Length: 226
Image (cartoon, rainbow, N blue to C red):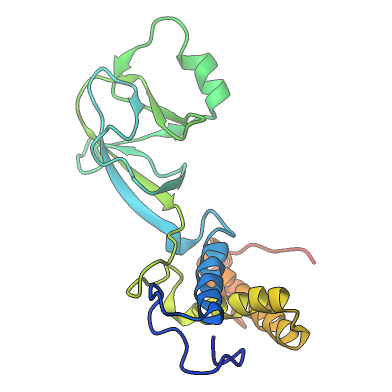
């Protein structure tokens, strides 16, 4: 990026060096902010997807950070992915219910204990199960992690490497806006919009076909009106 915007030299030697010039520090900051901005644009980027196996506790309906296996970088749960005792022939796919309805249906009065069939995500992003588990068993979940900021020299963005140019394009927009450089801003905006369209097509659900000349999967296709 430093070369693209005309900063003399070879650019920052280290993102944590104390000898960086003001301009080099700005480049480091713009790149880190650009990466975080793009990661935060959608909650359900494919590159943020991951899995967890959480240990439920017999007699306790709520899964929290105190449960073994609970995600430490949890952004949002994938609501169609919960499975009780996934590796057993007696596995149970759990049905999601919105919190307000779930609370009314299952949290007042006597609460049954058995193999869970329904779950909800509480406002604090913890999980609640109904019936209350009557055994200590693993529950499998998929979820989308929170974005991770770049901080060290060895850090690599969660964005797939073939799309890393979008980080530079977004960083150049920050630079151009702060330095009043319209000649850089114009080109950076054009490049960013093109790369964002490609990244979204590749990394968002049901979007891949819009970057193919011919639809490959009619069951994974969403028409976006103009």
